[in-house]
Image 1 (cartoon, rainbow, N blue to C red):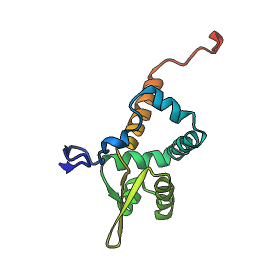
Image 2 (image 1 turned 180 degrees about the horizontal axis):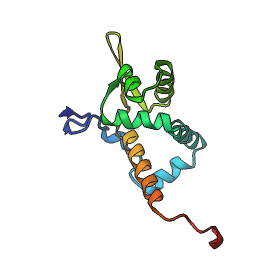
Image 3 (image 1 turned 30 degrees about the horizontal axis):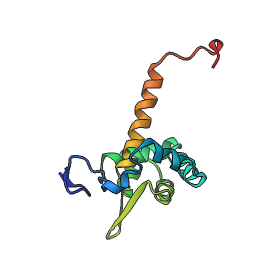
Length: 140
């Protein structure tokens, strides 16, 4: 088990969040944040970074455990520069963190929020895939 940032043991490899990191406690606070053009652009940038299937696959793998670049290259069957470029973009958007161990770079999800976004997106996609296609004649 891993020690989480909140002090308790965590069964997964994703860091926990401190209490003040959970954001607004009520809808009014969330609405105030959502009315900020800067906050909306930042959120959109996160979704753009996660919106590429290859980068999303990296996030899924990193949600399972911290991994070094070489391990990701081998698992994905892709070239080192390709994987490194994707990781660099994910890191620049704050979705993953990097740790150096000698000559190896290890990556992990930045925090529980990232794991939750990835999980929720994949669960929703699976639900949508299981539904019959909408009938376009019914209108919106």
